[in-house]
Image (cartoon, rainbow, N blue to C red; front, side):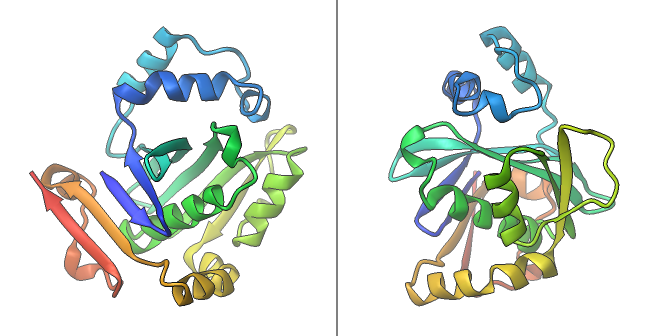
Length: 211
């Protein structure tokens, strides 16, 4: 699957990107902010990838003009409660402080709420990671009232909270004609994710089904 919007592309993670993602994940720019902080071997990475349920775990490589930048995901999707956990990390250090992670996050959340019809997302953030906390709060996330982990806390957001918090930013992008939305997926992915074109009311969306 590929998702195009805001000048970036989210492409489904394949086995070909595993080593790139593993090196990002083990780097000093990423690993210290993760709950699991041990080094990940190639074997561990492959075992993790092979264990993924592709219907309830969607991982995408973030790309800009063909350059790979990071990984973003919706994992543990519960199709009954219409909820999932979202996550992102930037492995290409040239883009850590750029707008690309912001645009990738907004794109994924629009896909989650408008296309997959999820009603809520959660994110797990380290309590000392103030920059990420502030960003998540700026796009509508709110901290859970009760927490079971002292080092990492969960934040939650629903569609209304997200769209209210990001209204000005998305309007600016619309005026810049940067809101073209295109999703390319296979017939199998369409059926697995239960994507119904008639139920997606997004004027700028182009949905392409390929063999």
